[in-house]
Every structure is written in structure tokens, then in C-alpha cells.
Image (cartoon, helix red, strand yellow):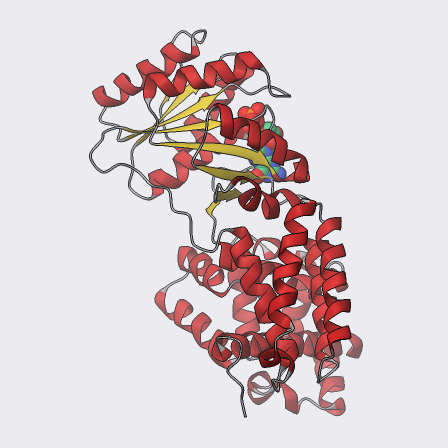
Length: 441
Ligand code: GDP
């Protein structure tokens, strides 16, 4: 997700960092590169134009240009603008307190991931203590109700199917069913089409009238790029909706849709889906996503992910590492945790620099590689693991011989450790630096 955009932006910032003082020309070149990177990620042209203009204006102030760390300030400006573009604040799902059941209705084109999103949302909300009921109101696609029933079975959530013909009736009956069965939430899956058509819109409007949803969420396929902007605008005028579930962000989506949708429609992204499994729906945090795009990792995300599988000591360790950097021992215990956390790929984007390091070292994510790294770290002494910088050439040869790996592999591991620590240092610098303009003179 966002890989190519992320790479290009990081390259641009790398070049700026290498310069020390910045001239207006340097900023112009950087802004041109950012513009091209966004356009190639299929971000809407008008959105790109506005974004770059805002960044440029903020960068060309004397506060930035004369500061001791101009490149850092430029990165901070782009980060802040990217956060605003993605929605600036967390866009929570708002449910009515005084209504039971609450109704959430999902709309979107066929294949956007609506039916699976309904189940994923039910799973997520069930985990938060709700008792959802799924309503199978996609009565046009024959397999949709069966698919929902299967997914409901997997996650232990009941599915109301009614007569499977009249979508409006199924939705209304599902709400009554929820009252009878003490479900506090109804999630309504609706019919989609390959393209917008009149009948689909009318049906969505009729369901909306019948069940008066507390939230209508539009499911959008992130692979659709900025094309989705037209679809979204049409839905916004006809049915209207409160927010977006962006699906398939795990694929090679270039990110254009996700980056355009808020500015073009004013509707926030509320959830993102990163896979096909029921647990792959996540609450969307614009600030964290912006940091991930700029290669700064997602500190809170790692901790949250770790909390799901780790005990208190491990969470404390994770926080200490992010504060103080980490040792080889930490690296080893983290790798063992990673397996539990759903694999390296899933969390790589959350660790600063990790996604890039992995891309540069193909195969780094495979299990065999983990075993090899484990062997190398086990051959280090206690002192070496805590202070890997002390590992000189002679020690590297000893470690290589002890682990049965090549000196090159030992070098590579130490280099990766160094890069990850360096990225964390940069990220700490940024978060401590705070607002632009605070000069460190
Ligand atoms: P609907 O027609 O909108 O109801 O779409 P479905 O829910 O049936 O999804 C269409 C296809 O996309 C299915 O094969 C899903 O498994 C797949 N899909 C949905 N969400 C995601 C996602 O976040 N990541 C990936 N990789 N696949 C997804």
C-alpha cells in the first residue's frame, strides 16, 4: 500500500536532508517531485495542486528557510498537510446513545468489498462489546446472502435473510428481529452494481427511508484510484453517507483514492480494510497513516498490535525501545512476537524504515530468514547484543563462524539494526521538535 508514493517522498526528503541549508530552488524542485509522486499515485489533480501550493507556501517562509534544520521542517510541514488531507482528526463511528438498535448501512459498488466489510465491521464491533445482527439486503447478487451467512457463522454473528427478495422489507424486519433478540446494532449490507444505476440508487434510498440508519458508510475499493471520486460524488448526492470504509488497502493500491476522497467529498475515511480475513478492518487514523506514508512508522499502531498478543512487560519493552532505541536482544524477542502478531508484512509498515529495508532485502520477510537472523544473534555475546556498535571485524567473523552464516549476512543484520535505530532517532527528533519555527539556536 502506498509503497511507490512512500518511496518517492522519502527519496525527495533524503535529498533535502543531504543539503543543509535550503534555497528557494531546492524547495521548488522538492515540491515538483512531490507533485509528480502524488499524480503518479493517482491522486486527483485538483487535490494535488492545492496540496503542493499549501506546502510550498509554508516551506518558503523565513522561519523554515533560516532554521538550523530546514529539511526537518519541510518534512514536518508535508506530514501535517498530509494528515489534514487524510482527515486530520480520527473519524469515529458515531452511534446514537438513545436508540436501540443502532443501524449502520453499507453502500457501494459491486465488488467493492461491501459484504465482507459488513462482516468485518460486525466482528470489530462485537469485540468492543456490541451485539450486532447482520442484515442480508443484497438481494440482487444471488451469492451475497450465502456469503454473508458463511461469514456470520465464522465470526459468531447472526445473519437475517428474510425472504431474500424484497431488500427494503428484509432491512425493516431485521431491525424488528434485533429488538426481539436484544441486538444493539444492525449492519445492513445492500446491493451494488458494477456501475451506478437508477434502480440501485432508488433501492438504497428506500432502505434508508425504511430503517433510518444512524450511519451510512460507503465502501470504496482503494484499487479504484481517483476514478472512485465520481462514484462517491454520485452517492453523496443521491443517498448521502457519513463516512468511508476504504477496502483493499493491502494490495498494490497506489493510494490515490484514499488521498483524494476527503478533500473532494468532505467525507471522512472511518475504517480501512487491509485483507480478506474478518479481523482485517481497522479504525482509520489520519495522522498515523500520514506517518506511515512518510516512512516514519506507526508507533501507536505497533503498541496496539502488541497489546493484542503481548503481556504488560512486553508492552513496556516496546515503549522503552521506541524511546531509547533497541538492542539485538530486543530485535530477537520482537521477531518472536512478530510471528504472533500476524507476520512481518503486517507490521512492517508500522516500524520506521522497516518496509524500505525489507524491500531492499528481498526474502527478508520469510520465515527462513528469521531463523537465520536468530542464529546470528544467538552467537553474539551479551555485551554485543546490548551494544552492537562494538562489533568490529574480528567479532563479526567470530559471530559468522558461530552461527554458520556468512560475514556478509552478519554485516547486513548489523546494518539493518543501525538503520532502524537511526529512523527511530529521526522520528523522536520530529515528535520532540514540535511546531515548525521553534529554532534550536
Ligand atoms: P461486494 O460485492 O461489494 O459485496 O464485495 P465482496 O465483499 O464480495 O468483496 C469482493 C472481493 O474482494 C472478495 O473476494 C473479497 O474477499 C475481496 N476483498 C474485500 N475486502 C478486501 C480487502 O481489504 N483486501 C483484499 N485483499 N481483498 C478484499
